[in-house]
Image (cartoon, rainbow, N blue to C red; front, side, top):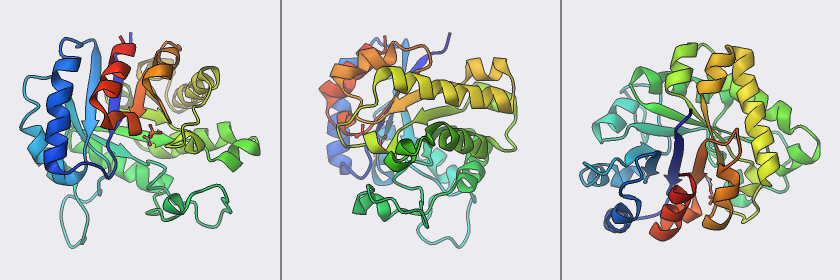
Length: 267
Ligand code: PGA
């Protein structure tokens, strides 16, 4: 039985003070829900302060990105040992807002999405390896753009992202540690949710890709979240599907009541 995992991706929101206030609001709302793994992913600047108030709550702490080298002349970057030092146990990798789609006309991408950081499947892979080596849990994001979906390429795109992310990683580590997040790019921050049947189907494609890379045991163990406009009113439906083991929540994770309602829906 896979334990459901609900992670809040705060993106570039919340000062330290605002983040602490949100956590204080959240604590009583999700107390006693140990049957769900709850993670919050604040911006780097708030990680350490928030780590100091999570003790005893069971709430996990994650970062939204990482660099794969441990230290060195890499201006602007944050390493995995640094994230662990700040109290993080998880890290989101390959979020569509960090992936590059250069050379591919993507008229539906917003200017914000076009201004990506150029993340690639190979980059996600090397960072996933470094994450596991540092003892953290990677949350690996995959998902198709609207035009890829319209061209019928969803399954191929997602499969390639999964296999690319896992290259060279041992099956045992995948089974025990790795979390995937299927996030159709067109559903992120748009209010457009992928229908639960389809979200479940594509999460099944992710699971099948893991089986192709390893075996059925690893595929059955790996947890796969859905992300993209998950909210209190659609969470229960999505989270009841056999291949959906949790959610990666953006907008709704910024409101304690909404995030807590999603956690409750996972129970
Ligand atoms: P959203 O974001 O819930 O605001 O759509 C999800 C994500 O980007 O992880």
